[in-house]
Image (cartoon, rainbow, N blue to C red; front, side, top):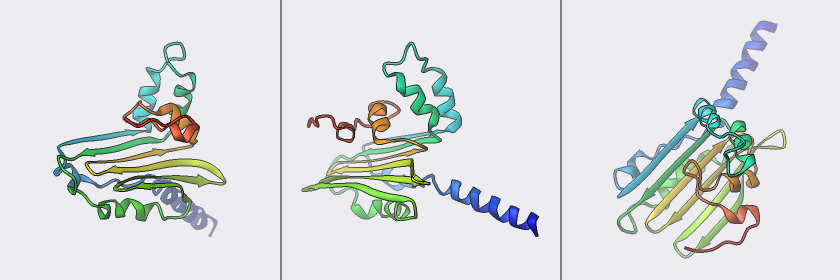
Length: 177
């Protein structure tokens, strides 16, 4: 009986950790996009990248530490030739995953036909992941950081690994391009 209970607990733990990574199945948008970026860095790739971030060479000493904590960085970015090439319903499968236990939407911003949402996943009261959805009429971006990362860490990762700058998350002044 103990062995069976142990096996069930192990399966549950594996299922919980596997479900932490969002499934960003958006290949149908890549065929419509004039430009697309697909970055998938799992734990082993991040470990490799961390080797190139020596403390003496990094422009941010916390960068190597932040990257070392992550289980994955997943970025999907699409640019379209004209507005209307995608719809908000294309984001629904991702939003449905973000409704699962542990995920909390902390920021939702909308202005005319552009907006952004930031979600944080917690485990035992501590940050365990961040997801960002951002859209404009001709651009769509989804970023998922899997692992213990804070909004401050996210700001430090901005502009690296395909992650957009998120100055507002760190309390910095927001400037429009």
